[in-house]
Length: 301
Image (cartoon, rainbow, N blue to C red):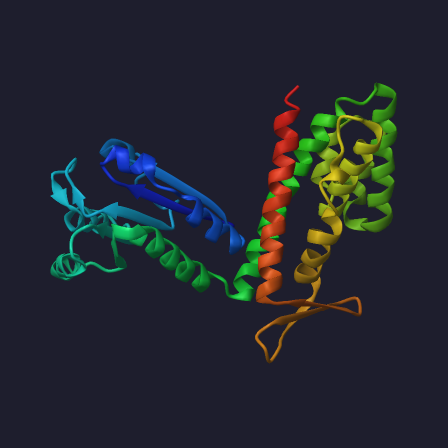
């Protein structure tokens, strides 16, 4: 699982699918620091297009599938026979005992039951999703995911830098690259040989390949000062919000605390990584990623 929670919801009643209020589910998932991705389908062919369903964390299925001319337990049994073990929620207006009997008869694992009345299926989806996310949220596990997400944002910053670098006057391009070459050479001897060869060039892509996350952000800030149409600083303090705690997790030594938190020590400083801090970081990562994506989308030229 990345910082996205994906649900595939299949009901062959198109009218029902179009009427479902997804906001409570989306709000819950966002409050856990994940991006909700809910795909609603009412056509069997559209459902099967997503096979083998590995991108989804949860599948919600109506028990009475008239389009398949069968009940949901037969449908899910076929999925299980194809090594699809994603958690499944059956929902129906039928009595819960009837659904449980069908599940037991087919010996299906990883299946939950919900009532379609009074929003029971919405509540069940939220509860199962919460349980699924909770199992994933071990601090050591989520530490790696957070660092991976910073890597994804690095790619966004690379794209922003390359796009707006091309807006600079020719006379400004080489000095900007030379400036960052000097910074890299003075701070990272391992990369100095590679980047020094770029001196005097306009090869921003090769330079970015050798910049750490902080320098990628810095180069976007530099471009922002030169180009009125780019204002990355208005997005927020990415260095303080994301890169500072990320550096503790990447380079610090974690110590398990009595309360279950992790304390990272790095260069004589300490950083406490708790469940609350984990949620804050995940939400901030989602925020910055969406803001940088918006910058890229708004400046396609």
